[in-house]
Image (cartoon, rainbow, N blue to C red; front, side, top):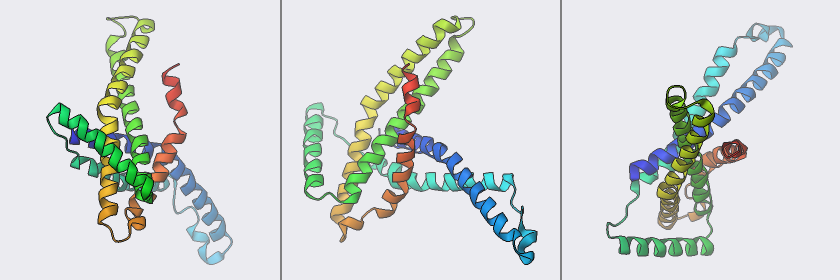
Length: 226
């Protein structure tokens, strides 16, 4: 289960990094145009114009997005490996219910940035990860069914229904556990820190824009159900 939670969050972070990849590239291109214009105005720096071509700009944007993704994985996905639960069903669900109540009570009493941001970004990432899994299931099933097994107009809805089922299973089996673990980790870190309001600051600063970018791309999900 901890490995599954880690993988789900990491897939969601990767999906978010794919979203910002193009935006980073456009920003790099805009900066390149600005500096080319600036350097062209001075004879001493005129030779620097066009020193960076599209290949370097693309490599820089992809490298930046990859470094950003790995950093967010370290802050958000890695703590999921610390997830643990009891084997006894009755104790397990009783403990989880009490854990949610206790953690949410502390969030209400001490709403530190880490306690607020980490569950939010984790929720976005696990949803994006589950959606990515469903898309993989849909494409794999469609390719496997179309042709010899079923015509395209039959294979497409069957693959979509089974992909939606896969997404639902992943969300109900893993998503809430990942969010719970993120809330537990945030709570533990804030309690152990001498300055709870500064705890986990870098992780929150790096992960929030990625989660927001993925959330703004959520309209793509609506097409899945049409």
